[in-house]
Length: 125
Image (cartoon, rainbow, N blue to C red; front, side, top):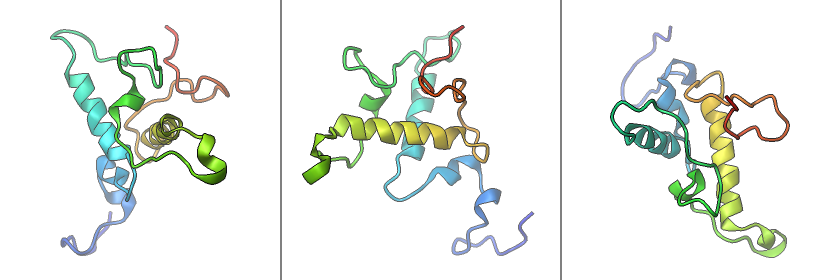
C-alpha cells in the first residue's frame, strides 16, 4: 500500500488508483468510451439483462460503437490519406477495448481475445 502524501498535487502510483482513473490519458478515448458503455448498459429496458447488442463498426446498422465516440481524428494527409476517419476511430475503439480488458484495469472482457480474427466480435453462445 502506498503511504505517500495523498494531496491533490501528489498522485499515488497508477497501480494504487481506482481502475477508472487509470483510463485517463491525454487525447485518449478510454474513459469516455467506458462512460458511454455504462450509459448504453443503463439505457436497457427494465428487467433486461445487460449485454452488448451493438456492432463494433457496421455502416449498415443504425448505430455502432464507432458512431458513439467523438475523436479528434481527421482524414490523413500524404501517404496515410487512404485511411478514413471511420477506420481511425475503429483502431482507437479496438485499442480502448484492449485497454479496458487489460488485467491491470479489468473493466471489460474480450471473450474472443485468443482468436487471431474476430477478437472484437461477440462471443457465440
